[in-house]
Amino acid sequence: MSSITTEKKPRLTTSAMIASIAAEGQATVAAPFGHALVKAAATRPSIVGLTADLSKYTDLHIFAQAHPERHFQMGMAEQLLMGAAGGMAKEGMTPFATTYAVFATRRAYDFMHQVIAEEQLNVKICAALPGLTTGYGPSHQATEDIALMRGIPGMTIVDPCDALDTEQAVAAIADHQGPVYMRLLRGKVPLVLNEYDYQFELGKAKLLRDGRDVLLISSGIMTMRALETAKALAADNVDVAVLHVPTIKPLDTETIITQCRRAGRLVVVVENHSVVGGLGEAVATTLMHAQVMPVFRQIGLPDQFLAAGALPTLHDRYGISTEAMVSAIRVWLA
Image (cartoon, rainbow, N blue to C red; front, side, top):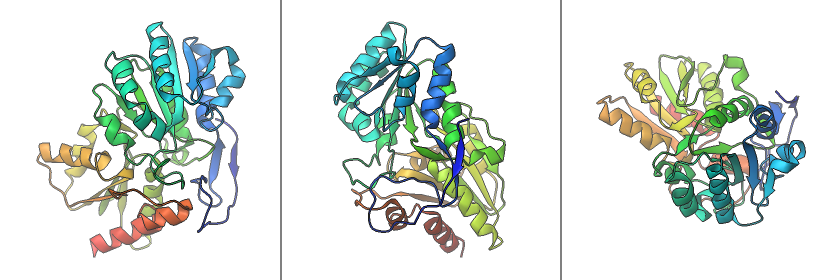
């Protein structure tokens, strides 16, 4: 793993558009995706890296420095990025295509759908700034990316929690045959799951901690928040389980159903995504088909265009901060 650092940062409340999602003093790892891709490429000569003028901002510049002959800068042309990645896959390469999630899923959707997914080409789309991880407003906030990708047949969807999850997921999706959409955590990424004897497995959910009162089902950075929430609620004598679901599609329905069958627990799905079309709806559909009916709640982003501003302020406002989650669960348990 890359070098781990801890640093204290002021809690911004007014501005700072792209900020770290790490809490004050939290351990972080620099550019885990870039370093993991370099490691994977050392034993897989088929791996190439492509980006649409965003190497530095998707950490692909780490790969470019190590393998300049396998790095392709496509310019500000996301459709071309996806088309070229599909063409390279047809020639036996394993392209990792990076850009921001909004540009991949909105601007280049048809190219992913027709060029890559319909032919089940071996392209890995790694998209930075997923959900509400930037304060730049609707133009850069990919709050519906999972919903769009879930609708594409055969598209595997991965939403890592932290640096460890990201590093392990890169190796796993490199081994997987077929198209993958992975939400990309970039820059100084929190390190959380090393405390839980965690190992990423494609298509598998992981119970990180057990609990009798509440089951939090989460993906991505919200698993970090779910673990923080569980620790906070323990002070109230509330016992909280956390089920991390890093693969959104295909969903680990067996584990989800097994955990939700346990009587007496409030089930809360937590996601950094719109409440429309994401993990919450996928879990709800799974439970309905299995005729498992726990008390069910969702914590996610509202079905609206979100404001611009500082991330801590926005996370509080839209209910995905640890403090907001703790408050909501206390109300539901009252």
